[in-house]
Image 1 (cartoon, rainbow, N blue to C red):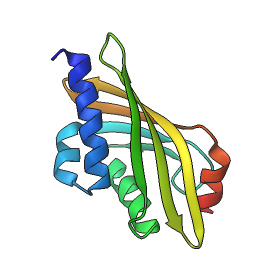
Image 2: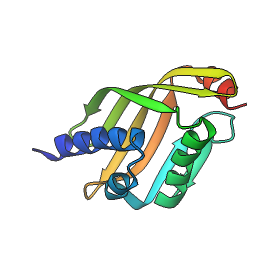
Image 3: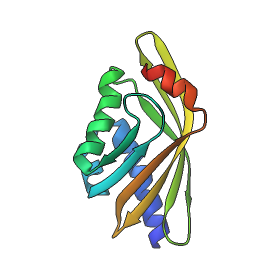
Length: 132
C-alpha cells in the first residue's frame, strides 16, 4: 500500500473507532498535537489543539446526545500527497430534536498520524439549531 492508501485506511478506521467509542484506536491514529476545526456558531464550534482537547470534543458529541451521535462514512478521497477528504452523514437525537446532516472532513497527515482535521458541513444551519 502507498501512503495515500494507508492514510485512507486510517480515516476509515477512525470513523469505526469514533462510532464504537474506541479511544485506543483513536489515540493510535491521532498525533498528540493534532489540531481540529469545527464550523458554526454552536457550543462546539471553533478550534481545538491537542489530542486531549479533540477527544473531549468527540466525547461531548456523544454525551450531549445520550450516545446517539453517529457518523456514517460515505466516501474517502485522497491526493498524491496522501491527504484525505472524507464524506459522511451524521445523525443524532437531543432534547426532542433530530439531526441529519452531510459533511466532510479534510485530514492532513504527518508520519502516518492525523495532524489536522477541518470539518465542513454542507448545510450548517440545521447543525447550529440542533446544538442550541
